[in-house]
Image (tube, rainbow, N blue to C red):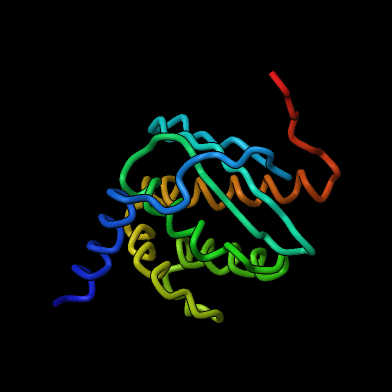
Length: 151
């Protein structure tokens, strides 16, 4: 089997059966992401414990690349410390945007998303969830908390 076929299969699997799909209630942090060019949108909800991302869920709709990336991201960052999540965010961003990038961290299945850099319009699809996660963590660090309602 060609490595590109294997990567395609990983992306299709995560699109068909997204992991960590849904919403956490209550959540310690959340953010909304939207790509107006293609209509992809998602909401991330997170729980943090002792400087770790203990749980993550995503909800929304988008193309196969967008959904697969969010699913794969949710598996990759769950249980990681916040500095580890930040380092992974930087690595994945470089994977998407730098043609000669050699990852300094083991990316595992996330390498399947590396092919998007050959299609600039698809980079935004794959990176939407990562930018949304980054925004959620920045909001949390700034002390902004999601609104909680009992209704």
